[in-house]
Amino acid sequence: KNKKTKRAQTGIPDGGFHLVLLAENNVGWSNLLKLSTDSFLEGFYYKPRMDKSTLEKYSMGLIAINGHLGSSLAWHLQRYDVEKDPKRWENAVSEARWHKDVFGKNNYGKPCFFVEIQVNGVEDQNIINPHLIKLASEIEVPIVGDNDAHFLLKEDWNVHDTLCCISMQKTKTDQNRIKYPKDLYVKSTKEMSISFRGLEEAIFNTREISNRCNVKLDF
Image 1 (cartoon, rainbow, N blue to C red):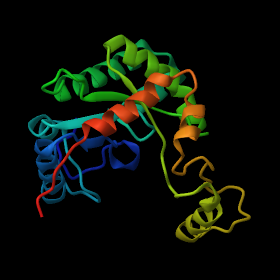
Image 2 (image 1 turned 180 degrees about the horizontal axis):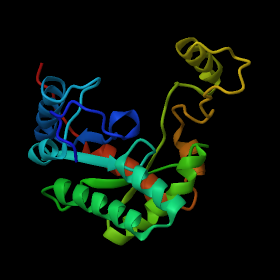
Image 3 (image 1 turned 180 degrees about the vertical axis):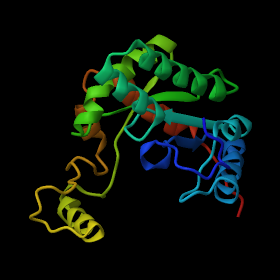
Image 4 (image 1 turned 60 degrees about the horizontal axis):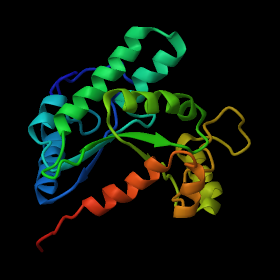
């Protein structure tokens, strides 16, 4: 809710929320460029930022995906899971409805907002996945399955872990340091299908979104 021009701590971990935006067409690509430029020139505070009013202005042609741990939906749902406060659930529903209203549907009636599900060994994500599925059903938006990728191949985990130690000035033997799960690599179609067994809709929609994104760049 904070305006992008406000230069103060938000109280939110990482200084803000993450939102996946994909260009479905050239209008969306143009709007992505505008959002990116604006977030650096007008919204920069430690990192580029955009606010809701800017997203509302440049939402046409974009597909939005919200739900992984760095997102606004996850922030509300994590607190709902701990506190069991109905107000927390209402906040998550309100946030999701805003995304549904802003990104709406394309010219062919296809939804442009998806609730994101990840199955990757991150316990906090696994805890909120049922809430995300329930939320998507309640406001009648589709779910989509994806996977965070911090390294390319499964066998790259150890190298990535070493790089993390260097960046955090920790040793490999330190038991109190951050360790990334080993599932955060670019999985194959087969691996993703196994992970999302019983949630085939989520996997179907990854292909659906991929087929819909059709940007032609003029060089």
